[in-house]
Amino acid sequence: MGTVDVRPAPRDGVAPLPGFAWRPVGLVALAQLAVLTAVSWRYGFHRDELYFVAAGERPAWGYVDQPPLVPMLARAAGEVLGDSPAALRVVPGLVAAATVVVVALVARELGGGRAAQVLTAAATALSAFVLVTGHMLSTATLDLLVWTVVGLLALRLLRTGDGRWWVAIGLAVGAGLAAKWLVLLLVAVLGLAVLLVGPRSVLRSGWLGAGVALAAALAAPVVVWQAAHDFPLLTVAGGISEDDGAENRILFVPLQLAYLSPVLAPVWLAGLVRLWRRPELRWARALAVSYPLLCIALLALGGKPYYSIPLLLLLVAAGAEPTLHWLRRGPVASRRSLATTSAVVGGVLSVVVALPVLPPGLLNGPVLAMNKEQGEQVGWPEFAATIARAWRQIPPPERATAVIVTSNYGQAGAIERYGPGLGLPQPYSGHMSYADWGPPPDTLRGPVLLVGPAGEDTPDAFTACRVVASHDNGLGVDNDEQGTRVRLCAGTTAPWSRLWPRLHHFY
Image (cartoon, rainbow, N blue to C red; front, side, top):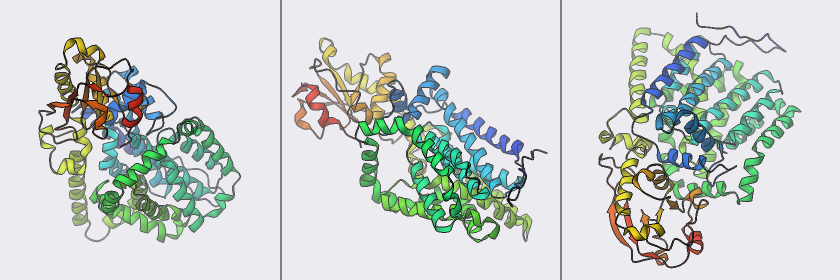
């Protein structure tokens, strides 16, 4: 029961696959979706979500730090489902559920039977990183699904040798480039791995060119926009490497163990060994080689450690069979007890770290140390109220020509979202794409409310500045905006059109 036989007929010596366990895998995905939906309303918008909503209100083929797909989805969710965190998070919840199914399909592609598929689905659904990206809308949410889909299609290509799968890969890559360009790194390491360990025959297929052409055609509008704006995405990526590269390298190995769950480390390591050692999986060795190649690339580039997590999920799928084999050997009762205890502890830790299940006041400490994004969902209405109190210190006759300038897009997004109900005007910011949505009109020559360190690098741009407020979220959460200072300046030393290029920043 619960297994549907969708095995293809053997072709050219290709062995048939086990049936796919649609019912139990589907139940795992639905259970995960139910949990994500149940907590989707808690805390509030994440700073990035506020930015995506703002970007979606200004549709374009690209933005300084991202392609257009996520802002488009944010706008669609708002128009169809309503303006709330729960409505916005329907999208990531569905994407996370789809990721669970895709990774289970990878287990099947590697010969895993019903039990291996269900174990893979459960491990994926309870992984901390999958829960984080499934709870809130982000570019990583879609990127995770894209990487796992490309991985599944690549394995199908390598297993069957049927070059027509290149077209499907091209479609997935092209669509993925509308969300995040990191998928190109996956394509690069997979291609290099195939060159190193084979099967190289798939690279000689005429369908490869068709796949590349399809991906290029789908990505063309996004690439053209980036080219017309001097490829700001590359500038942002370079800044991440320069500013955070050392920290990313230091934390890389520990975070590889922690991002999914320490409990799953033995599973994906077993998958890595299985892919390399098992003769019947020789065709899949490229997947085993891709992960260390990706790690080397990320260490060299100073990329974020979570960029490699999708490949770890594919290795979890590969490690499900040997994990089950280990459980069936020797003293079964003790091994199952150990596995059950580990799974429960790992699952609870993942939920607590990834999802808003604790009272906000309990986030400080280990939770924020492991997942600071929880704190970035707390206190935005209170933040807008702090700005409103500072705004009211401007004499009413001067407010018509006054300007609010923030230091980052989260602050601007919060004021844009909650400010109108508090009597605040449209905010401006030099951060990321908000810089493209400015500058303020030159006719606004009145007082300036500077939020955070905005303008501190250009002290000669503003006159007679004084601190008028310091933000306290009132919940005791030590997030990035706790303690943010608000300064009120008498005015500017030059028209906004001249000052704006100096206020533009990516980091």
